[in-house]
Length: 342
Ligand SMILES: NC(=O)c1ccc[n+]([C@@H]2O[C@H](COP(=O)([O-])OP(=O)(O)OC[C@H]3O[C@@H](n4cnc5c(N)ncnc54)[C@H](OP(=O)(O)O)[C@@H]3O)[C@@H](O)[C@H]2O)c1
Image (cartoon, rainbow, N blue to C red):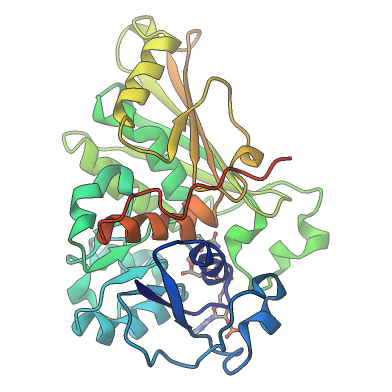
């Protein structure tokens, strides 16, 4: 198979290149970027020195699959003509994740460049949409926080275990904010610091709500999602809290919840239910999402901890997992690396 990447110079495009280099069924034939156009990829990213490509301004070669790692809006603008020509596209930006154009406009503050394609897009969370992905032309790769939160809560919400009021407390490493510099990601302001942000509403909230509501359409959900920036390079850890519906959780032991989660993710090679609360280092560089569900018997609350590498399972790895499913390859192909530890 041949693949191309639009905007290779952000962290997501860069990580996609690294992972595709090891994919046995794919040749990366073309990569594009704006400011680094016409430079050798290995000059821009020396760690990719085995990938012999010159960065192009625009795509010129026909490929089986096109990945876009552009920022939102720019991504849909660039992809619209390629979608119209029936290319198979995986968009890592947020542009096709929300089904409702008004919600996109409200949260992203821009007019959608091609709302006519919103309903054609398949939400690229393989654990929920594997069969739809097999025939998808356009895949909306999920956000990094949404991947961790939706996977953590999907089994409980599908089983109708918890009340609609849910709290998602997430911590992210700084690469989640991308490569573009800002004061908040500046070393001297991030190092030895932990801070909450997005308290009035983070853009990933409508995405999390949209997908969790589809699992339990009878209930409204009241989700409080508070992200935090922490001084590490990669990784997301989400701790999710929901009150169990029955008598203060007494009918739910830790082991019964674990069984329910294991059964839900039975056919999902990249979700592991762990025996201990996981840490982000156990996912570094890998495509795994580690999930630890348990019950706080004192309060009757379900507590679910999930973690992943935001650039792999939260972006580039998930995109490749989606590609594997779209092209009828083994889902794990090219993604079997274990985490780098310590
Ligand atoms: N980082 C993550 O963990 C993560 C996870 C999931 C999804 N995503 C999504 O992936 C996409 C890329 O994110 P990222 O973190 O890789 O971004 P990033 O590291 O901040 O990179 C943004 C890159 O895009 C280029 N760029 C900015 N505006 C552009 C425009 N209008 N047209 C063309 N190029 C433009 C910039 O390059 P120059 O200015 O040098 O040209 C810069 O290299 C975003 O949509 C993001 O939401 C990121």
